[in-house]
Amino acid sequence: MTVRRRRVAILISGRGSNMAALIEAARAVDYPAEIVLVLSNRPNAAGLAHAEAAGIPARALDHEAFPDRERFDAALDAALRAAGIDLVCLAGFMRIFSAGFVEAWAGRMLNIHPSLLPLFRGTRTHAQALAAGVRLHGCTVHYVVPELDAGPIVAQAAVPVRPGDDAGTLAARVIVQEHRLYPAALALVAGGRARLDGERVVFDATVAGVDGALLSV
Ligand code: GAR
Image (cartoon, rainbow, N blue to C red; front, side):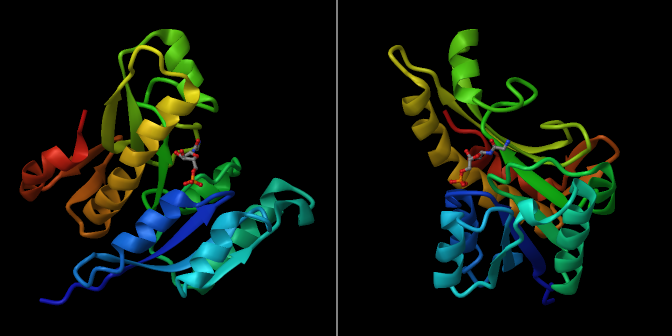
């Protein structure tokens, strides 16, 4: 049986290294999603050029050109609908949505956050982890809900915090795992092997076999 690949848009604000990891993963013919659109709220985001070079339609929707959050979100929503998007992946998208936008895409929008949620929401997560003295840190892919950096967790990867680490060395260790985790998590969701059940994510029986890909230290 041929399953239709889910049509995915990636939203970025900057470098786009997670976007690049998703694009690379989706090149595999058996990957259950295709990346059909990249949008940035910042016209100078480096990731836009990378997406274009990979042959993916990429465009900026400059939030500063809109009078308020609602009208920016409405333009974003229109662009996503026009492209027939099934799933939205936030990848370093540093802009808060209106509640209406999140509700419109509820259950169809994922985010990657550079900490083991629910620890260390917000920004400067690596500095937060160092200040807290945790020995394990990492990253989380979760469904987006109106509350910032909350929402049902799809997958996490952990890294050690080593003596002598600073925010830079820790970030470098975490981003390697982000690039593994996000493609794995999107594959689970797009392939229907992970799905929302109320406030939790439930997995089908085949997922036990890939536990090792979801947690590595
Ligand atoms: C990533 O570390 C991502 O987890 C983080 O921004 C970085 C974007 O890098 N996202 C957040 O902090 C969202 N709250 P990238 O542009 O190279 O993917």
